[in-house]
Image (cartoon, rainbow, N blue to C red; front, side):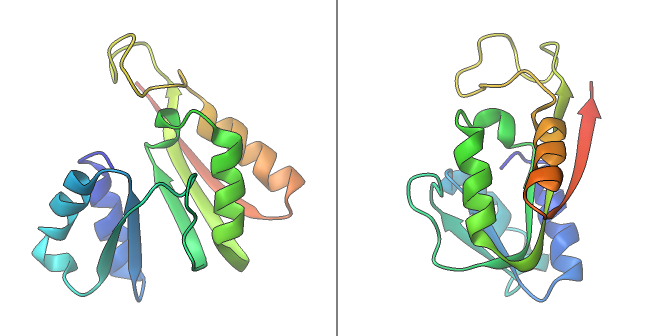
Length: 139
């Protein structure tokens, strides 16, 4: 969860009854937990859902600036589908073009150079009878 994604969590939390924030980094979840305005509204779960899915489903899954850090995006999208309640939605926001300004070349843990969210939004909405809202960021 990038620092800017705390903004996304705050925005979603202002509109939802409850938010479950999932990240593989406990340090990022600790930063999120330090936001006093989110107390009692957001729970953090430090878990890799690719290796160990959660035991719950959600009305909305928001992935903001994370997909380019996931090597197996096919498995990630399968996990998203498994974690959605019937009629649930996925909102993706990620890099559309990455020329090295966001992550320096050869950054460890960056697997995709761009447009991953756009490609998945099109694939998701046309093949899975699901709704996906996609936003891309041009640098």
